Image (cartoon, rainbow, N blue to C red; front, top):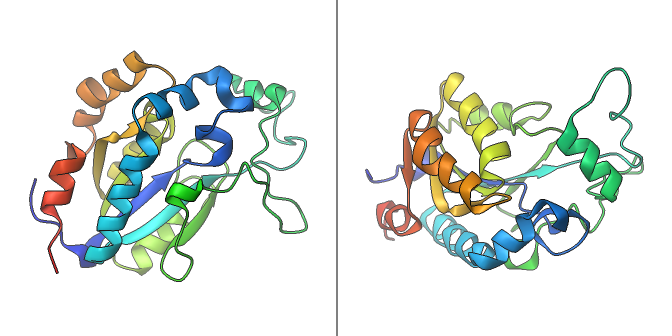
Length: 213
């Protein structure tokens, strides 16, 4: 992997939130089990600590719902993954009063540094859709975007694909991502994402490409 130009690079923490990566109502998906099995939060933490130290911009892209899931229903929106989350009571909500649920927040191991990081509210499976992510990246002149988080075959795939299509150099740290099952993750990092991303790399490769201060 080429040396990273920190002035042009952001790292996105995609949907790595308590309600998605911790045991709880989303457990039926298999994601929390995969996160634990692969020690994902510790790996993301390592990537974030090194990124901040090197001067890479950290951006959290957090999935949002409104209480009651008003966008789920006939005849407009029949998305099985979202409907299943609604039925299970997964509550990554942002209320009309401006408060966030505990499930929305990021785990303590990887929580944002509010004086340095950006947090983007995301209402879908694509980090760019229904969010101000693209505006932030272009305003900051960030052209290289590193993706970590959950799930590899949903938000990682959707965000990397959209980012590449609109002109960003998308990089995936494969062992800083996980999905709902082993084969779903492996198919993405070995067969799909290499066809979309500028690079799919291991955490150690990413760390080695960061400049040392």
